[in-house]
Every structure is written in structure tokens, then in C-alpha cells.
Image 1 (tube, rainbow, N blue to C red):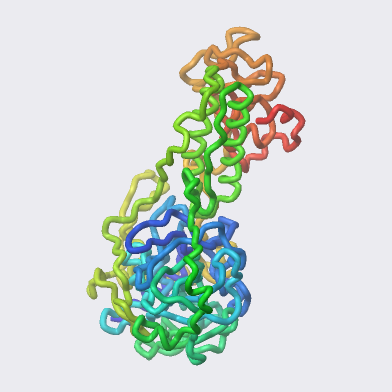
Image 2 (cartoon, one colour; image 1 turned 135 degrees about the vertical axis):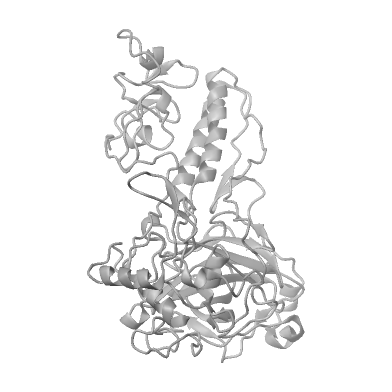
Length: 555
């Protein structure tokens, strides 16, 4: 059975898949979603966010690329809580999938107690492993197979013996498919977490369990390289695999008293100063927070509040993680409402002051499970199976084979069929004739890295084009003073809203900004641009002017 999987798997390695890599984007605490990107350190560059760590002895091994800098928010969990980590091949979930099935390997979760989760770099000593899983000989699955079968969710119970305080929680996946060729692929990230409980102090980790990251593994470490395909050793079937890193250390409440260096009386008597996400946040996107604008009762105050709101929105888009910017759009709806009231002459506000906005979150697949995989204790090597995993699951031999693909001829959705062993062998022969790494990420495999940049859900073409105002349905200009759809060409630089003015054909520029000003700069023509009152371009189109000459009045 395993030998046939090798043939099928090797054909997959040599073929081009769209969802090979992965990224930890989202956490759940006792089943409650914390929001995409909230409290999670992740790479800033969406185009390479899912790529594996390039140097397994470098600082990126602690919390990933850009992971030595903390994020604004730290989530909270109680001792013994179940924490779930969502892995996605497309961080913004524009497509489903977690990691390709050819990327077989172990999983682990590491923990580090820190003074301040936002300020700690994560590098250095103090890390210990609370759970790991390699190859399960009973179900004949690698841990990654189980992650795929569970729609990207990996869950563990926190040790009950963790003292109150801040921690970095570090989920890790090691893909071994290219390891014998010098390319073990580590995927990881860090969740900033504050643990609450009835014990204080510093956890005293036995020296045999504590490791430094980076430094806990290198290319010579056991378990970093393993011949999962049996290319060089046909006896390798996973049953002899040993996960890299230290043995699992799982402090329980009964043993925590002997494992704690008790804090001073002044510290232990003080209240927990954890603040979490500020109460003033009306909505969060990743680790950005939108706060209410100042109240106003005159025109100047109204426009100042509008400016403040749009400025906050711009920061939201600028700071958005690869997991997406959907809630920045929700915030902009609030800004548009304020602007519309200013345009209408209603200068008392803001409207709906202090009302929390409804957050947009990606829904979990209905079949996904958030049950802990370690059942209250760590496991080593063999691991424990999540309760939903069926030993007859085909996840070990099928990537995302049930997901529809679009054919070039018809554009219709078809289901990918798992090839037979004969077909896989034929695919191998064809693929062996092809050379090169198609994804451009220099990781040695032949997969296309998905476009994990922050995707504008409304833009589906490869190259952005200007969006005219319903040109197919509305009449064109009727005269020099008339714009598209009967709108008046702007005479004062204003547009949109209740002005009945368009920027199309105006001397101020052809784009109507989100704040109702005509211009041709990036700020006018891209993010938030009002296509009903002029032209708009995608930020990658480079059709706007980079100067700010006509940005004097704001945008």
C-alpha cells in the first residue's frame, strides 16, 4: 500500500500544483475564532507569505519571517484551554486548501513564556515542546495528512500547569518531501497569548526539555531529513520516523508548584495587568483597530471626523496581513456614512456613535473539528489522532482532490479524480521530462506558489483596467458641462456623494477619491476610488501619476 502511494506521491511532486505551501493565519480558543490574523505574527509580504523558512538556523525559525517584531494584540486563554491553529494555502482564503498532500511530515507545538508578548522577539532560549506527531502507523498517516483531512485545523490543549502570564505559542509543520535533496521545509508562526489561572511565577523548565530557537535543529538533526518517498531506501515507510527537537514537556497543575519559581509577594498579590484588545475598538482587521471619531456639531467638525475615519482606513489597508483586509472595507462603510451626512448638511454626529461594527470572518468548513489532538497531554513521535480522522481516509493519497478546478476549454467546474497507479507512473514519466522550479521561490520544488498577496475580491483580471461609470447602460456626455450618466463635470474639484459631479473630463483629474476629490494620484485612483464618478485603476496598473500635485485639498 505504501509503495503505491510513493508512486502516486512522486508523480504529484513532479507535477505542478497551485496550493503547495501553507501559512498559519488564524487561531481559535475553546472553539471561538479570534479573527483572521488577530494576535498572530506573520510575514508582511503576501506574495511569499506561504513559502517555507529559507534558513533553518536563522532567526526566522522562531516566529517566521518578520516574526521577531510583535503585533499589537495579545489574545487570552485559561490554563488547559484548547487552542486551534488554522493553516491555509491561500492566507486570505480566496481558495480553500491547507497544504498539498505531497508535503508529508510531522507537526509540533512549542511554547515560550515571555515578559511581554508584544515586545518579545521570540528568539533565544526558553522554548519547550508541548505536543508533536510524526507518522501514525495505525492510520498510516503523517500529521500533515490529518491536517488536510481536518481542513487545515490543528488543535492542542494547553498544559494546565502554565502560570499566569504572556506566552508565544508556536505551531510548526515540517514537510519532508524534498528533505533528502537538501530542502526540509519548515512552516511556522507565533500566536501571542496571555494565559490566566491560579498560579503565578516563572516556569522552571527541566534542562533536557528546554531549547533555543534558532539552534534546536540543523540539517544533521534527527528527523529533519527523511526519505518519505523511498527514493534511496525502499524500507522507509514512516514507522521508524522520529520527530526532530526535544521530547515533549507538558507541565500539569499537580506538578506546577515544583516547576515554578514563585514571584515576590508584591508581584503575586498584584492584579493581572493584561489588557487585550482595547474596549474602544469598533472593529479589528488583523492587529489593526478602528476607534470612534470625535463628536462634532458643525461643518468643520464633520469634515474633520470624515478625514480621521478615512485616515484610519488607509492605515488598515496598509497594515493588513496576508490573511486579508475584509474588515477594512467594513470600516470604510462607516467612513462613507459620515461623509454622506457631511455632504447632506447634517453636521451633528457621528452617526451610530460607539456602535461596534459587525466583523467579517471566514467561516470554518462544516466538517472541520476543533477538538484537541493531544487530549490533555503531550505526545511524542507516534502522536494521537484527532477524533474525526477515519483510518480509511484517503487524505494520505489525495491532496485537495475533491476541490473543483476550472478547465481552459469550457471554464466549467470539474472534480479532480485521483489517478490510478498506472496513470501516476505515466504522469511521472512525463513530468520527469520537465525541468525548473515554476513557482519562482527557489525552494527546489515544482509547485506554483499561490498569489497570497492581499487580494481585492472585486478585481479578477490579471491587469487592471479603468472602470467607467455604467457606460453600457447610461448615455454619454451631452455637452461640455455634462459627465457620464448625466453627471456634471466637476468645476470645483469635488465629486461623488450628493455633489452630482464626476471627475471624468474634469481639469482636476479623472479619478474620484474615496473622500470625494478629483485627481490622478494613486490615492485618488486606487484604494477606495469611486468608480461611479470617474475612472479607477488597480494599484498595480501604474496608470496614475505618482506626484501629489493635485492632492492639496486631501483625497
